[in-house]
Length: 252
View 1 (cartoon, one colour):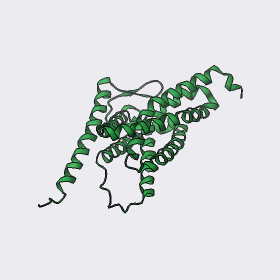
View 2 (cartoon, helix red, strand yellow):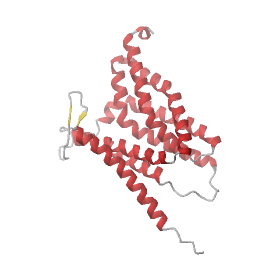
View 3 (cartoon, rainbow, N blue to C red):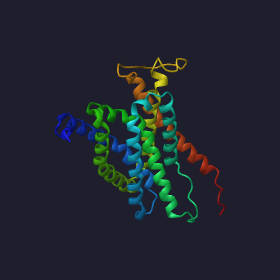
View 4 (cartoon, rainbow, N blue to C red):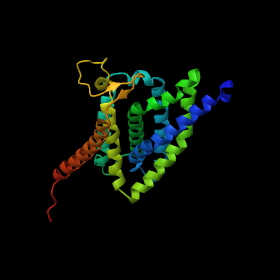
């Protein structure tokens, strides 16, 4: 237990908590969007179980962060999944005629939270892994402690976002676009497009630094995020428009 007296341990823990809080804003939006249609009595269950499942998977993901993020096309697949989730949030499937059991909706919300958080984590765990790497054998302990401390922050934040969405539905649109924003950044930093030593037949629009991290131009960085957000918005509106045009016209 002598590591508890090490300043490096506490500095690293503080860094991880800060990272979790900053990234928790994204997670809070996803949790709130996934749970917004649940009955009030089930919202807390959806938030708690969804967050718990996401935290467990994130710990596993961080443990293999360096290996996962070095695999080509993983971020590309994650970006596509995020765009799909964002569009689904902007244009949710039509609900049944009240015959859907509440537990089914709850499980669907939990599944959405876990999948979205897992995909979003792919692009962010490198920051947490980097903050913990100096702790040596205690690095995973640091990660777990940081995530546990961040849980109440994420849960509280998602409940706040739900209340805001009830008053300001436009937040749902911004939430979906946020997923597209993250997806755009994930796609352009995929090792297949930035690492010359990987998949050499793919076009390269960036490089990697001495630590193997992707390096791209500021213009491409911001453009990719903006395009991703606009893509989700456009696809969401297109799906809603097509769905509306396919509905039978009521005759008076």
